[in-house]
Length: 224
Length: 237
Image (cartoon, rainbow over all chains, first blue to last red; front, top):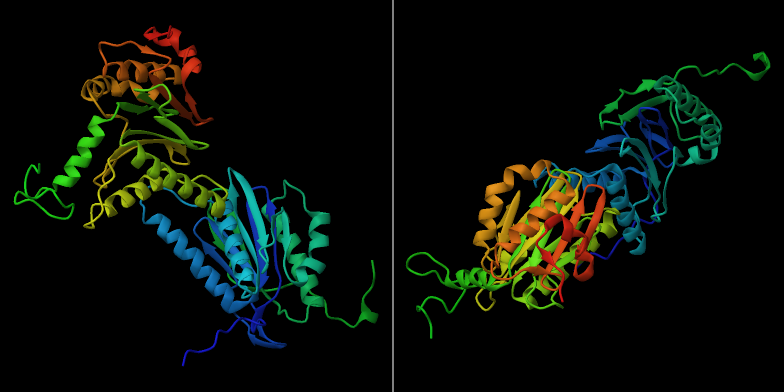
């Protein structure tokens, strides 16, 4: 007997928000290292930011679907390199491809249950895009997925400016991760930053505890 | 009417190790009206002889890709349609232009398949593919045998040997040529294939693509601006 056709009806092991911004020399993205099983903080040290060829990707949503997407894109980048003609996909080209894949899967009513952030560069300018499980996509200098869309995006839009230095960008994303840690139930205080320069150079920082959080009882906080 | 007993089928080797059907197909390319291509660091130019004014020898396929053909017209159209669909598929998936090299590989793979099965015949068409992509300017030649070659300059078709001789003599100048100089070289080169007849607005066709220029086909009256540059292009009476 053939097994019945099965579809992803709900995500199982899930990652929460990914936030990203462009800065003057590239793109910086951040996420925590938690993969939840329902409301259980099941895997607490999982990298959700990955470097693939000319781009960096990160995703919230189902972690196994994200692994599958990572494999798909890696395979595509590898196949291009087999031509040995010096050609490499640009980040926007891979992004468009990913959008087609996401839309194809939603059309089969079997979506990759993710919101994927892709970072790279395009003709000497930073590129940052986002695609969801329906294939809806856009490119923007500030991007946030999951709860970040509600909690981080307003902060990013307010404080982002095009000639940000890496330090400023880092501080801004840290601030967002702090807000998310306070307000999003499915986070932990172990976060990871990754950046990609205009030359395509990627740097994935090791996960580190999020600092600068305050946990005193409200009465003892002196308001500014 | 067979030349030998070994040429009735594309998959049968002769005792000398030759595949006659493929050689005949390569021969069909040499029967077609000549076409030549050459490239500089910034531009690629295709030029072709038209035996008939309405013939389409040079075609734009994408923003910065074009091709010219020599051989069986019907086969050429089939390959060109295939190339257009490959180009469209790549554009649909990536919102950008296919690398020129990949297109040449796709065409040669398709041609090679036709040399592999009994019951099919090889394409009787040779092609020059010109284009610009992130890797720079490109000129490829494809053959019915499934081979493809990357060239600085190249000519195929009837009486293309004198054209090749011209190109071999001058190819070292090409990399630094301006657009106009390259077109002039192209017209002078192709003229070598018909020493007894002047080029005019009805018997040739030029395709130009550049780093900052889309692939454009120049035919008929649109060739006249090149007249002054070449001094050998006579207005058709």
